[in-house]
Length: 563
Image (tube, rainbow, N blue to C red):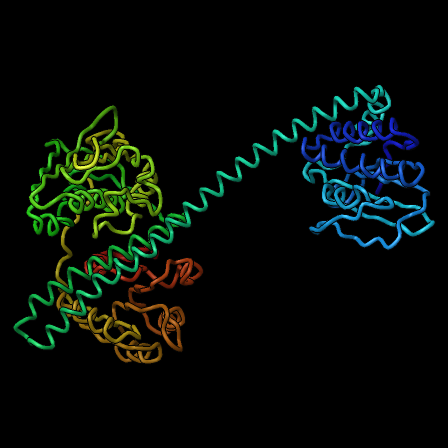
């Protein structure tokens, strides 16, 4: 539906100025933004000038069109000689032909959202211009339209000088907006270039960090082949140490993806700060001892309680302690302490290491950022750990800060978290080593990677479980039916029958069904587990610690959560 607002003749330059003014007033009354209003008014003015200069005069009709996206329109008509050989070139770059009424046509077409032209030699020219309005606002009501038309009628006409002054003000405002937009675009471009530089640097570091442990493992295995069983203890120590390093790299990368997608779930419980510190010290003891560093731990004798995910908080604090050791020379000093200040618990990690550039500290927690001193350190890591720390701490409603007196003067990192309500009234769940299996527990491990299946089977056998392995779904299903297991640990991405199909078949044919533990290199959403939550009791992301599986097997069945 179309509603006409205003009709006017175009006979002279004063009429052209009047038409521009009315176009601007209509846009203002419809709350079109300044830039859009200026574009529309300028296009209407240019086409109206063409109608006067080249068409001998004409008319303009302003209207509203009720379409899915509402439009404010101007239809400009003249009965002049028309345009010969007109070729629509709206939106294309190129040299414009300045003849026979084409002046302003191509430029006007670029200014508006809708541009339609009908012309022929001797038949005049008809141009329809339109700008889109906000669909959420819709068109004005009939009462509002009446007020709009009345407002246009009451608007007084400007002289040419006054209209020129108005146009100059509009032009200056538009130029100011363009300058501001240009500055913003330049800033965004600089940010994108910096992000691209960091990404390239990160990929180069990632390749280096992955090759190092893989090279060490490869060399250790070569030694074992040559030296035999006598070299086994040293080879196993190297493989275990480098596997942990690879595990940490992969965990950090996966955490970055999960955090970016908002897929990390925090399982809060009441936990003692001292327990977190003890776990973190245990995780990093090997590295600290290897560098003969002095670690001082200062935790209040009275337990300090907070609500936290013990695994994720230990990961965040452990990252800070690992960095302190990594960037502190051999025989250096590290201090890890816990304090309570104004209802918050403070975890502070101080070191006597290479320090930080004060100017670089504000960017230290951004993705892929490393300070100059860190980049010179061949074991500096990927530059994503501190970003993960900040994200994990934020999920606990806490903050993390860093400070340093400069290069060579050490660094201090602090995590601040809220204390638990009713301080001292709760206690964390006891977390001990799972008890040995006291009754027959049969476990079937299903994985098409034979080395992975055999390694996991050996761990389970050492813990006292009876274990069988299968490399595909059909073989696993046959094992289940022949001797039903109490536990199944199965890879999701199996050849042929998938892990999800296998789990469904086992639950349909074995009673009572076994405890189901899904293994996958993908998160629940990407592995298809979210749509099949009822099939599995637990979900372990590869690579995982055998200790994590042992802890799961010692617990009662629970909804499938990622570990």
